[in-house]
Length: 113
Length: 116
Image (cartoon, rainbow over all chains, first blue to last red; front, side, top):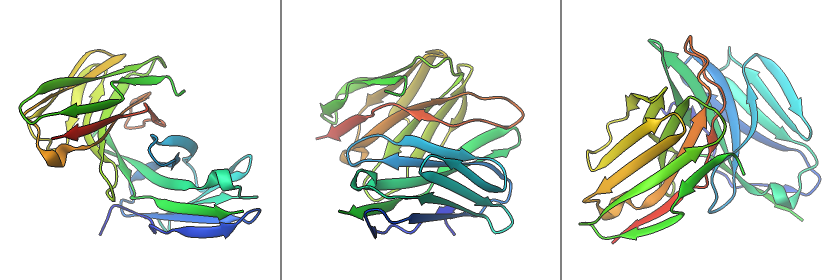
């Protein structure tokens, strides 16, 4: 089982719709959760981070965390063509005082004009 | 701009060459990372430095040699690489708050490496 799993997509949504991106993780000790956006040929750019169960909103973005189900999601409201990119989910967990970031393979989002 | 810079942005090298990648962060962070990103694969963590000390070496071949002279600078020295080492090499930094908790990472623009 992969440590962080994402559907590779592409996920296609029409402009103005809500895009829903999902991520599951295997380590119950994971503490911090991150969403990055990566445009083709560019480096990952941090969009959101969440540490506690529930929702966290920032502009058009909402991160949702459910530790019991080991599930984190990203909602993008009023999707724009400029949101078309690969979205990476990352999980941080600590083992014996050291910590590791584990990334998923990413979900490619296409917003259709 | 994220406050993390990398040079060079593109590098083509032969298998017998020796080259170095440089990363500098201007964020006052105390942890720095090297990642490798190949097509169709997740980001692979290579090395982690906390307060200039290496805390993670993720089974990386010895042809990759990291160096962290201070908490703002990180190097990746390359020698006798293989064609399969061609990839995007990303540097990142974060603030380690101790007690096993770290915060979000900020990435540099990456170095696109091609080994011929």
